[in-house]
Image (cartoon, rainbow, N blue to C red):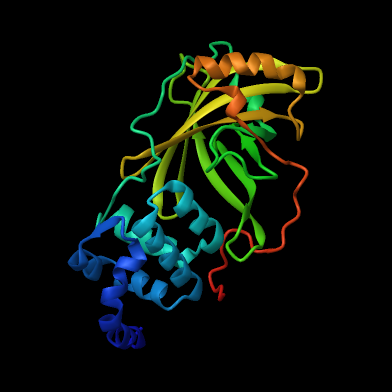
Length: 289
């Protein structure tokens, strides 16, 4: 306990200029707030090799390419518990940072009509995502969700394969708590999580279900709002099979148009490509790269 303040003295002076790299050039920061509340997680990030790569990557996005596509690429490559810990402290808990919304975020979520006959209990179990809309979030290989909507703990865990900057691939997991906020709107769900140090609410609108011989096919529009107010959106097509039966496509195109999307622009997901070259899951606390 006594050694840590001495360590902070050793790194504090050279670290001050690098704070812009930690939070990215698309952020404004209150240095006195960070020093008061978040010196320890800041120091842990500065001393961690993976976290430093993350901060440099995010900083480069802020300089030249303030998009979710750029920052999500950083997360896929360098996701790190120490970076998340700093962001949790400085952004979510104490408001020391002000984030400029990415240029490819959306101003507000759509509110399409949901399927009034949908029974959310059918979501229990594993659902693959063979087709998606967002090129940033929905098109990764080997993508599925394990749903459990039985009380008392209702949750879903999403798993998908992502590329890293070094050419390797790994699995990412996002674990979310699920609620049904409106009993009169059974096709409307809220998923909440703490992702990359930020609180996130992801809303799901189930527009309809297409029955096929192989599997039910569920059309879901989603919109996620970060704790600092900006949103992103996409579409997940859910199936019990790894692929989308062709017979479902005409009806899905109608549902997509109802929500303001062109089904012809959606991406096909390769759910047979489930081998990875980097075995780490999410981030190891002591990773050195």
